[in-house]
Image 1 (spheres, rainbow, N blue to C red):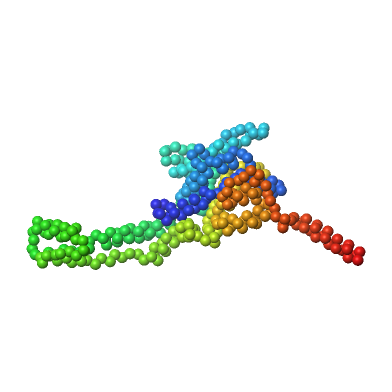
Image 2 (image 1 turned 90 degrees about the vertical axis):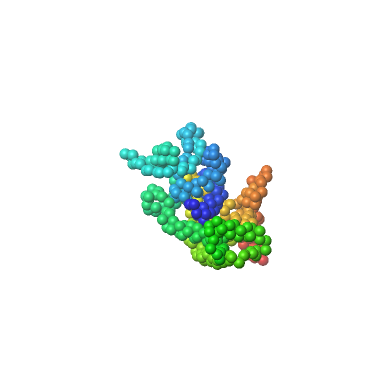
Length: 377
């Protein structure tokens, strides 16, 4: 991960993930969704812990997820009685950075996870209470990554070594081309002392020369050296960089920020969206019981700020959703970066759109009226 290309790919992904808006959502039996006012939403909105903002938290989680292929988050809570019910009141979400992870099972089949940290501390926690966000969950039964539950670096390391060698070779080629430009040939037999005087005299001439022409005496001769360092061609360098970018699913336009709408849509659907869904499911699985999940509780990481990448898209969304009453005036203002105003939580609907059933009733009534008029005639 010392590679600048690798860090740039991860940084790009972490920046995009940090724009997400996580929310605790409840979906009732009619399919209507509502945002819950509880400790979970308070933490996810303002700051998951005392050290991080929501943006910091999501960036940190993404870096851990990409570097280790496993991101563990500890949800700290205390038991409280709320409305006569025993409830978990969450007080913080903490990304963990262990050096080693072990899984243990007790006699009743309950799974525990033990974390070992750099300062030699360790902690044992019930696995079902830890948020575990995996990457490439394949060979290992519990961890993301390779069969050992670690980052899949086997295929990437050879490419990075080649890239490093090419950069080192370029650096040496530049230094060599500037090091020795010629030889001073002395046409006489001189002892070491005389040779040293000749060298110093030649260096002084170089220092004093302003025209670039060096005066040389008959007893010495300057022989220029032609050095043509071998530098790797542009196509080879681009091929190596392309292999690294492909590994992370990141195109060069995405990396440089010079992407089109189609470029970003492809990046979102291929790289970001699956991870966003997985992150929400990992939170939901750890924070809610089976009964709560079945009732309709879940954590969703909304990515509307990722999808509306330009003003044209925002105008299209405002036109479609705003005219149908799906967005309030304040939500429309937020879409364009403007602050809300009092009374802006109303939903306005265009008269050009009406309910389908009402439209059918209207058309039938008009048909009956026309039919009655024809009969009277």
